[in-house]
Each structure stands twice: as C-alpha cells, then as structure tokens.
Image 1 (cartoon, protein in one colour):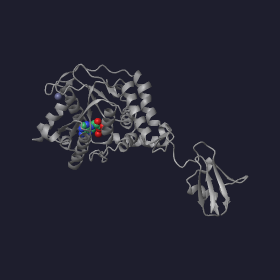
Image 2 (cartoon, protein in one colour):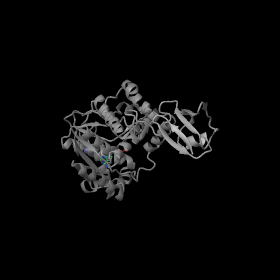
Image 3 (spheres, protein in one colour):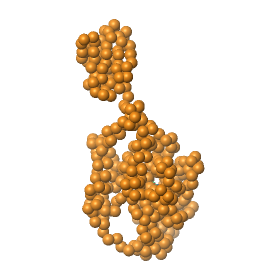
Image 4 (tube, helix red, strand yellow):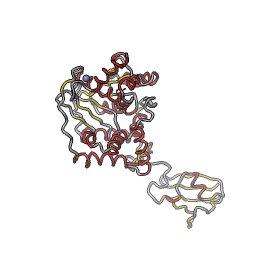
Length: 371
Ligand code: AMP
Ligand code: ZN
C-alpha cells in the first residue's frame, strides 16, 4: 500500500499501487492544478506511477486548493451553498446571517419599515413569501399573514392554504384567509371568458386589490410581498423590451402610502435570488409548496426569467447588476408622469383615477356575462 500524505489539514490515506498520480488525485477529488505531488526530493507529474511502497506528499499550492470541501467565506467551516454571483460560499449559520443581513439592508436602505409598523405579509404558501414572513419575524417585526384562496386548481389551492396555515400554526402567529369562492363569489379560472383578461392578469389584479383593501380596512401600516431579485429583474426586462418608461419609472421595491388610502407596499427580498430564498426556506426547515401554479404555463414573465437565468449562468451577477444598476442609475433619471388624481371607487372605496376601479369593473363584467 502506498501512503499519501495530504497537508492542511494533515491526514493520511492508503492506496493500492502502482497507480498513476492523476488517478489517485481524481479519486481524492483533488484538482491537480492546485497541488504539488512530491516523492522524496522529486516532483511527480500526472502520468507518473505511484508504487506500492511509496510515500507521497500532496502539498497545496493555492490556499484552500487541496481542501476536500468548499470553505465558508465568513467562518472557514464547511460550506453548504455556493453563491457564484457573490463569489462566495457559506455554511448554514453564516448563510442565514447573510440572508437576514440582506433583508435588513433592504429595509433600512429603502426605508421600508419602521420598527413599530404592523405588517401584513401576503403569503402564497411558496418559498418566497414564507421565507419573507419568517425573516421578518426573526427581525422582530409585528406580522400577520394574509392568504387568498384563488382556486387556480382544486388541489393546488388546498395545498397552498395548508402550507400557509401550518406555517402560522407552528409559530403561533395569525393568518387571515380570504377564500375567493366563499367571500367574492368567483374563482380565478372563470375570469378570462367573462372579462377579456388573461388568467395571470386577472389573478394579479385580484391579489393586488384584495391585499391592499385588507391592509387598509384592518389598519396595517405596511404590506410585505415576497417578490425576489429574479421577479423584479424579469419585470424590468419586460419593461425594457417594450421601453415602457412609464412603468419603469414606477417600478420600485417600495411604494409609499398615499393620502388616498393605499397602504405602503414593500418587497424586502429584492436583493435575494430565488435560489437564495429556496435555500433559506430549506435550511430553516420551512415546509413550502414546491409546485408551481397549474395555470402559469406559458406566462411571459416566466419566459423572461428563463432568458435571464441563461444569461446568469454565463455571467454570474448579471441579473443583480441589471436590476440594481437600474435602481441606482437608471431610475433616478426617469421622470414619473403626472398621475391623475385618485378618488374613492364608487363601488369599493379604494383609490382610483376613474369612477369605478379596475377590480370592480372586472368583477362587474364577470357578474353580467356569467348569466
Ligand atoms: P406571484 O405573483 O405568484 O409571483 O407572487 C408574488 C407575491 O404575491 C408572493 O410572494 C406573495 O407575497 C403574494 N401572493 C401570491 N399569491 C398569493 C396568495 N394566494 N395570497 C396572498 N398573497 C399572495
Ligand atoms: Zn373598486
């Protein structure tokens, strides 16, 4: 048996000889470029044979080079996740620290929340919104969950509610549930035929309306939404492709409260990628709905996400640079068009530039055409 002495940290392994250096290194998962292989006074190359009685030293030449594991950038322990865009890797504890640090930084930098704010967290049962709720609680915010049962699929809806409810029950926090069929008398899949809107368009309008209305009626100071870096970058990408400067000027991780009754809306996860929110949820033992909404297939935003993912694979960090660059350098130069004056919707009382808000118009159209 040949003895292979690995250095830093020092340990010995024994291998049957004769064997080529490259085979031994491959079996030990060591990149030949990062080490010197030494026998007595001599250096060995990849093709050299290690004999049965040899004693060989494998000496790292790049710090960390001969390690059997990736090191945590913060503590030097064994990493569990690599973040290429940050050129780093973290162990569990340090990743959780990094994650909540990014949320804290977003909240402070963009003046999203005051420490005493009562926050309504919009939860879908997926990784982003449950990770958001969890981290906001960790940071000490007074939170309540809000879940809409949208009925975009029987099983999907039941599961979404179950994940959201279990999360709340396990932590002893309150979840407000709005069942669309029960409380509003319709389900999302009925809307395209009667309103001329796409499924995702109708669903988005419904969510935005009901969340804002609940926050206003129940006196919350802020609504927190689980949109992450990937979501925001995909929306921006779509806006750029159309040069929709009006939307771009308004796209922001924080929408302040308005005098007319819109509660402040914040997206504290905008500095974190989808993979990072999934990692957080996994490491924190959060049970979440992994399945996508069954009606989302073909959604334009998902297509944009796919394109940005391909770009990110080739150039790690491109997505963050695209979105953060927009916030820091693009957006400040964009002039927001004067928005029309808002007044209460005659039907629901929420602020709108028309007599009736677009949600109420959609619901009216549905009620008329369904008969
Ligand atoms: P999505 O539009 O599905 O990407 O979701 C974006 C964000 O909207 C989520 O992170 C949640 O904060 C919120 N949201 C989505 N679905 C629901 C739901 N059924 N009930 C309450 N909030 C939701
Ligand atoms: Zn209305």
